[in-house]
Length: 142
Image 1 (spheres, rainbow, N blue to C red):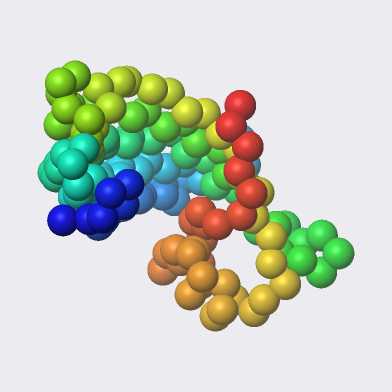
Image 2: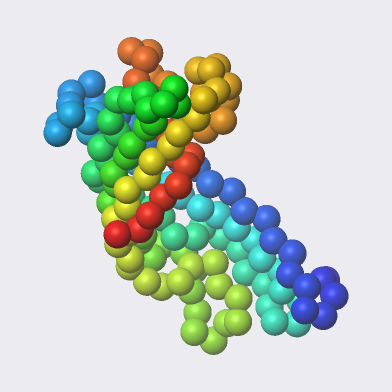
């Protein structure tokens, strides 16, 4: 059991993403799903574990890489929907889910001056045709 005020937790994510070979507005269309799971032990406050919220993005646009001042720039627009799939109880001080449906539109820009191999190992997915889906960088929620 954690000391007073301490919290121990472990969590994991399963992320599945797909990008089409067809383009829309100059970017590749795609979808993704993220399922979370966690176990939280908050000592005297309680303990909870299980599946958390599920995030579905039925609309992703990932544009081809552009070069600006020698840096590779990637851009992405997504609309995420968080579904209240996690366990929630009003009577509990510790919950894995939040019992809320939320919508998160965002635009992200990633840049790097690293070579492609390093870039791939730092958070970008590369398809067999060479397209990339990058989730690193600065994101601004709209």
